[in-house]
Image (cartoon, rainbow, N blue to C red; front, side):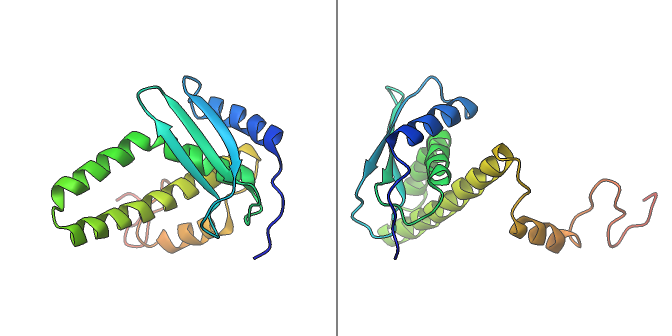
Amino acid sequence: MRRRPSVGQATLEGWLQKWQTLLGLRDWKIGVELVDFLRERQSGDLRVDLPNREALVMLARRPWRADEELTLVHELMHLVLWRLDQLLEEVIGLAFPQEGQREFASSRHLESLEEICQQLARALLHADRGQEPPADYEALAEASRDRVCREGDPGPDRTEGD
């Protein structure tokens, strides 16, 4: 796996300031730190102190992904969704008292959370950069046309005026 040096602390702090404002997190004290992760393909992590409204975004000192801003926004999405994430973990603990079931539900929750944070981060960066949605969005929209009826479209089983 090819790694490269980070864009640097100053650039990361500039992005953090920008995204903290855009995401409505100005009332939080958030820091960003470059670290060496123990896991080979880990790009970022987040530590949260909810009562004090403080968070630390940790990003790989030698990232394997090309877009560090995407990783930063992804970690900030975890912060935006933090309370919901914690609530779901509590519900999972109550709903699945057996360890195996709880671990399964927790892992599915984490997989879903990661996908949601990544999708939101990508969408926000595309919007911020004035880019079109990624091609996979267009494929998804095309694949859904036979299951939904959009405004102005009579749909597959409807005619005009229904």
